[in-house]
Length: 422
Picture 1 (cartoon, rainbow, N blue to C red):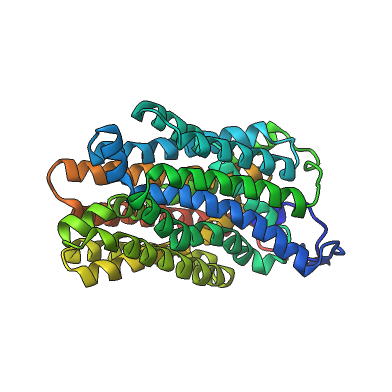
Picture 2 (tube, rainbow, N blue to C red):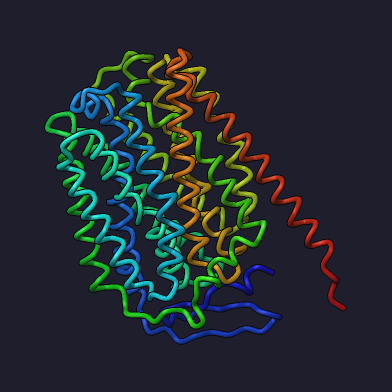
């Protein structure tokens, strides 16, 4: 039903598209190597974005000392960045509706690079928050457009894996970029991290310029055509699912450094190790989850929400034990397995509003970021302790499961109302 509305590939790649039992294919003008280089270029940008977004979480105590604020107050910069993503993703997707995807990606990554280089030079906490907000503006639109480009290069039954390959840049950042930058931040300065992220942005612009072929804007592209995505209840439900279901991961990970040192009484030197465990979990979840999503899209989403609830509760119950803290941190990273599935789900239900819906996925993801960090900080401020952030995550995942079931029941009802073919 919804696959009939998928966008035609912008780059001529052989693929089979089913519509009313008729099969069609297009001759490829890109080799397998060229497709790999395109995905590598897109993933490089994801690596820079992921490093900038996640590494700061492990450096909040250092930021707090620099600007003479508390650690929970320093956590507001995470929310500021997330707010930039939430605001920027739909606005940029609408503004760039008539632009080619290559041009839009180049502009987005240029803005991201400049924003992070400026963040490294922030003179005070207020300006730092403003710069983090501005740096977040291109985040959602970049990932959304990158996912559409990657999905257009492969057959329908491999879409989730193509999206997962692009997201490997994001998850790879948590494995390599985040621990390394956390180490540099602790030994040198957190400003070094933002300088490095800005340079990765410059590298991404170069790679996209050389490897992503020039393309034309979609035929009939317009602002109204993009806005039609938000007239579909399934789009709104999928975005609500992402906003709640991912919140638990951020409620825990935003304060993982303080949880490790103050609850589990682990040395500060172990913080990069804990972040690496989280990154390994995200990469495992991304690879395995994208493969499962190509087999059963909705089954993967529902199963991961149940998994989230169990893992978040386990974190709170065992946070005082170093070994269990490390184990549950790895498992919380694995909850990212739902990411490629939810992104692909939006492609299925967005009809003609592909760019706006795909970009809005990352708005929802960063609503989860802001919501999780805020609620986690709230329970800490009220004296429940850092370990209680896991319970916050379990509640958010339960809300996400409710939204998911609502979506399934609504879709089943719509299917029953459709006339059966003769």
